[in-house]
Image 1 (tube, helix red, strand yellow):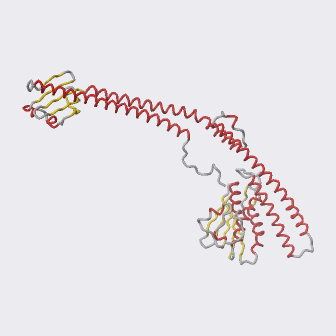
Image 2 (cartoon, one colour):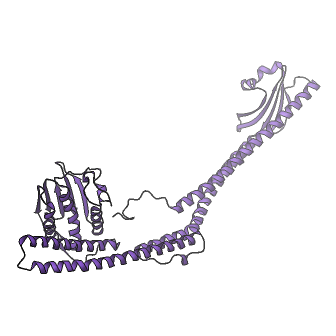
Image 3 (tube, helix red, strand yellow):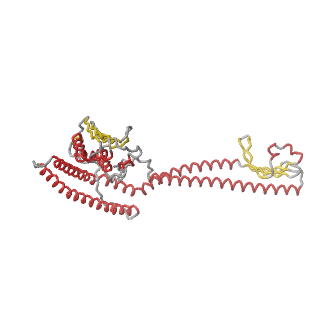
Length: 437
């Protein structure tokens, strides 16, 4: 029987890791968006204000020049960062090729000067007979923009680290009650008994969850106790009449007046009573919900049990042309009750006898396994693992009687003692069942 610890786990993302990543990414993204917005707004406002101002000033000086018509002086004014220039028709060719191609408007120009790259805004107005240029040196602003981008990058990195620190701290605070609840549940799992959880938590969502788990655990505990009491009572009540049957059968078989046919029938009754007793013992082991079967130092001779099982199943062959063969290649001794091994072998060999209409059923005992081969209708390879589930029967079972519980009991008993039971089709027809210790 597969347990929660035996089921392969996919890669698990811890809840705390998800909280940390969410908070850290949110803080980093928010800081980065703020920095990007600051850079964008600064550039947008700078471009708009400087460009609009230059355009207005250029238009103003051009209008003033047209009114004054003072000549074709190439330079109107020059300050530390602003230069104005008026170029007449006879000076168009003296302008650089780039300036000759510039359309009207405000442009960003970067040139290499004596002190390094120089960036300026250039407002251009080209009328039919005169060109107007107004330059504004923005080299310092460019340097300030780069410094701002660097400072904002450092700020983003700092706040990203701070967001991770805050995320780890806040997640540990938020997840502390959940982690404590998980730890206590794990302790209950290994101790095997439930202890109240709600008193250890505040009256919040985690406390409500702990209270709900307490209620659910109480219901499960009561259900398990009722189930155990029922199983114990039923086993006691069944063992009593079975003991009477076995005792009475032994007394009757001691009579000298019995015929051989009657004596054989009494032996069948005795074997059936013994099988019922063994089945009750095995079911009681399963009802305890233990992770490992009790051993108590008991060693069972598997070969001897196999002989008894085979002999008890021979009458089931009836008139079918089937030969039941037992081969012993070893005498393995297993640390388990005899009743458990008898129940497992009864189901494996009994199924082979039930479904084999002709041919043979061969039971082979090796040093570490029992292998049962038959010449029956066989099974499909894809349905073999499913036959160990409750109420599942093979497609070759037809209309034969059975509830599909025998192999499920075998699977649970094997899981209890760490054995392996398998079914597979034989290449030459029939099926092969193996029990490996």
